[in-house]
Image 1 (tube, rainbow, N blue to C red):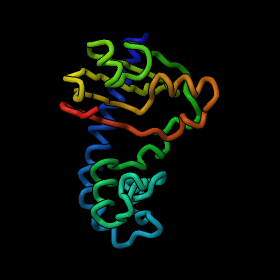
Image 2 (tube, one colour):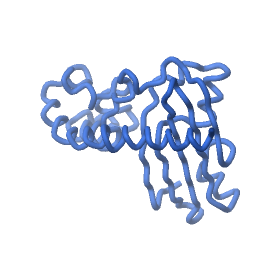
Image 3 (cartoon, helix red, strand yellow):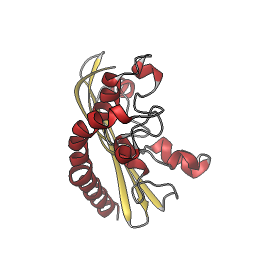
Image 4 (cartoon, rainbow, N blue to C red):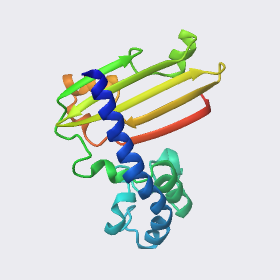
Length: 190
């Protein structure tokens, strides 16, 4: 069953990423500059909602824009760093009602560069959760390159072992609206 869950999770993520998200990301490179002059209160107009960020606004949190709320910070936050961010709020794509089943494989907990350096090997983790008939997948892989650099791949939904535990135990609100990610960082600091 776990193999089928993983297969369905990967197929679901692939469809959402390549069939829906990637075309919207590309379209966002044009839509955000067109929508930006019509922004109100740190948000794009309603017709550009999918490229907005209901949680952090179009400029992102202060640590990102550092007081420079301008087109450049909007572009970097909304088109480059967090493209199509509100997709996580779309009906049928979020997991606000909880999940029905989960599987976890690999190293215990979330892979981190520190764990990879301590273990002196690559660390990885695969989390699968089922919501209704859909499987959501999250895969992490981190390999230390040196004391200061690491290689990272992260694909799928932003769900982690700690996240699944929190939902089961005490924090069901953390289940809502985590996004989809694709990170390929061949020489990351940290």
